[in-house]
Amino acid sequence: MSLMINALSHDTSVPDVLNIIQTAPDSTPILVDLDETLFLRNSTQEYLNTIQPRLLGYLLLTLLNFLKPWNWLPSKIKGEVSRDWMRVLVATLLFPWTVILWQWRAKQLAQDYANTTLIQALTKNPNSRVILTTQGFDFIVRSLSKHFPINFDDIIACRFWQGAIDRQRGKYFLVTASLGENEVTRAIAITDSKDDNPLLACVATPCLVIWPEAKYVSAMADLYIPFLYLERAKRPGKKYFLKVILLDDLVVLIVALSLVNSQPILHAISMLFLVLSFWCIYELGYVENDIIAERFEKKPTLSETYQKYKNRISVWQAWLWSVIFAVPGLIVLELAKVVSSDKSFAFEVRAIDLVTLLTNTAFWIGMLLVVRVTFYAYNHVDKQTRIWLYFLLQAYKYFAFLVVTKTNIIGAILFMAEVISRWIRYFVYRFVNGEWLKDLPHKMVTLVLFGFIVIAVVLGTQNSSILMNWQTLVILILCAYRARNQFLKIVREYYPISKDKTIV
Image (cartoon, rainbow, N blue to C red; front, side, top):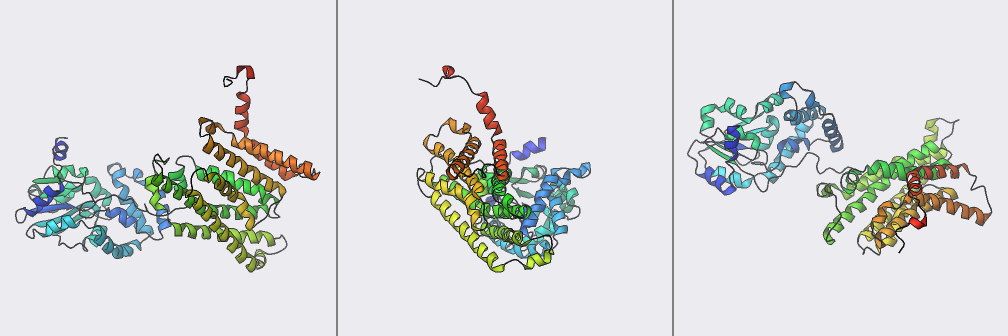
């Protein structure tokens, strides 16, 4: 404990560090840390960021973070101390070409993120011994350090296979094992990490310094993942993708479109792909909405994670993912038209009308462009005008799919009920903007609207078959189920008007 307290007292400013380096006696060992010091990023994270394909690399790192296999190791090397070692080890074994890719990428990184201020100070004292000391990994560090404009007398880093042991022992052990205690006691040590306190406590001149330009950037931090912004930044902690996109929008599309198709399962699968395609583009509007709010609003409503995720959105990648999802969706949609029990699957695939498929693809992409332009207009007009564009944005969530498939009058009524109920909620939000909005029973509104419009159509056309239709029954059951809690709340809160305290 006394060593740590002593080391913490040696916080050093950047000018003082530069002066210490330039005035150091000849042959003085200068122990320079790499990550966030000589290199203004983290070498381990940048190596992991080199994994290709990046999406698979992201999935691997996410899986490792979920499983935490470093907690399964023997007690001496168990825990967070071995986290980066295991991530590097597993990633390198599963993606061995990363080692080659790193050789190419390291040169550019060294040019972009070398600490030129520190390097210039070190090169101005040519008689000192510059030793790169890091708890990064040797094969990563050496590929990077050879591109710095400085000659290192030695490089002390963690080994690949024994990395967990080296990191558990710490930098002080690695340095003394390589240089000897006598060299360490007369050395200058420069680092940004308080994890190096044991080393700082034993050198002649400890320098604990934070470089302003340094930044810790996690691996894959800039990778675009569809719907990640919705989940982590726009609606953090609310399971928006599951509850709204899949269990709300997709279910509505299935009961309105797929249930009346001759191949409901295939059609539902196609709707899943097309919903994902649609939301890749719709998500761009949400990102743009938050950026506009940050720029123009005095008190924008932004999540705590907004800053972390706003730069992870890539417009061209969003469109690429949208097309990737759309293509299988449209193929399956066409397959649903030709599939039958008395023909082979290969025959059915050959029976797909290529012209129709290409036409639907063009229609779908065109529809997505219309959605994107509308959302752009919505984000760039005043908030009262937004009320009318919001109606269109909600309509697109359902009626946009009719450019490639079809529904019946019952499905269209369900779409109308969904759109109007959401628009009413937004209308109240813009004009009332009170606490009552939180309790607005929009699912109950959808149920009432659907029932009302169905009855109106039956009375107007004198066609009761719409009311007796099995699809109508399924939709009513679905709407009633979704509105059950709001209905029970209305019943529980009922009281006679004589007890209504809101009456003036």
